[in-house]
Length: 312
Ligand code: GFB
Image (cartoon, rainbow, N blue to C red; front, side, top):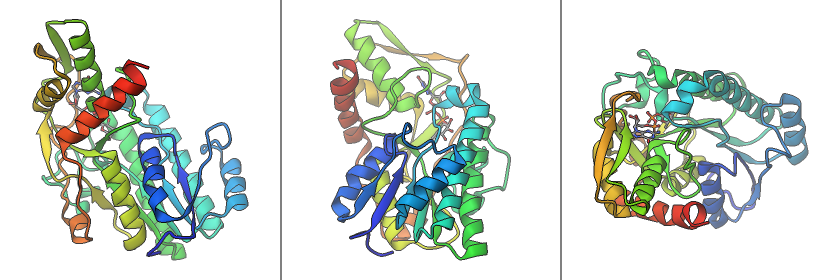
C-alpha cells in the first residue's frame, strides 16, 4: 500500500492522543477516514467489532485505541490495562483478518522492552529480559498485540505491521494529575504553581530516570510513512533518538511556562524504569526523521493546555 489516496482508512481510537493526531495527518492523504466513538462501537466487544468491520470493510486500519496512562495509573489498574488492551487488539486484528483488510498498523509502546535492556534499545531486544513491574501488565498486552500481527502475517499472509512509539506528548493529551504521563503533568504543575505564586512544585520520584519524548504529530507522520512503505514482521521503533532526565525536563517545562520556583522531588513516588531510549536506526533507515524539537513541542502543547484546559 504505497498510497492511501482513494482508500477507506479506519482510525481506531480517534479521540485519543495518537488517534486524533492520525486524523489530522490523514487529511493530507486524500483518503476517507472512518471513525467510531465508544458509544457507537465498544472495541472490547468482539461481536460488535466483527459486525462493524463487516459493514464498513476498510482498506486500512490504524489500531491506535488503547487503555493508557502514566506510571501510577498503570500500577493502580493492572487488570484494566491488561484485559482492555488484550480485548481491543484481539478483536480488531481478528476482524481485520476476516474482512480482508489490506493493511493494518498496530501501535504498541516502548515499555515492551526489558527493564534493563541495553541502550539505545534495538527492536531485537524484545523478550530478552524481565519487564519493568510498574507497567508489565500494559507491556504484556502490547507484546501480545505485536505477536498477533506477526501470527496473522505468518499463518495467513496478512500485511499487518507494528510500530512502537516512545513517550508521546502533544495537543489533546490527558492532563489529569493522577492518571497522566509525566509531560502533561509537569505542564499542569508548573502552570498552577506560577498562577498561585507557589514557591515550589513537586515532581514524582528522584528525577533521575531518563525518558525519550516525541511529539504526537511526528508519531502520526511516522505511522503514515510506515503504513505506506513498510511490510515486515518485526515491529519498528518510533522515537526521537534523544532522551532527557526527568529533572532536566522539569527545568525545561518551567522555563517554557515561566515558573521560577524550586523543584522538589517526592521519593515516595515510583521512578519506574531507569532509562528507555530506543534506537531510531531502523526508522531512519526507512527514510523518516522527526521534525518537532522538544522545546518547541512543549511550548505548543502548553499553548493548547491553556486554551483547552486551564482557561477553558
Ligand atoms: O510518564 P510516566 O508516568 O510513565 O513517568 P513511564 C515517567 C517518569 O516521570 C517517572 C516521573 O520516573 C515518574 O516518576 N514523574 C515525575 C512523573 N513527576 C511526575 C508526575 O507528576 N506525573 C507522572 N506521571 N510522572 C509509562 C508506562 O511509563 O510510559 C506506560 O507506565 C507507557 O505503560 C508510557 O509505556 C509510555 O515513562 O514511567
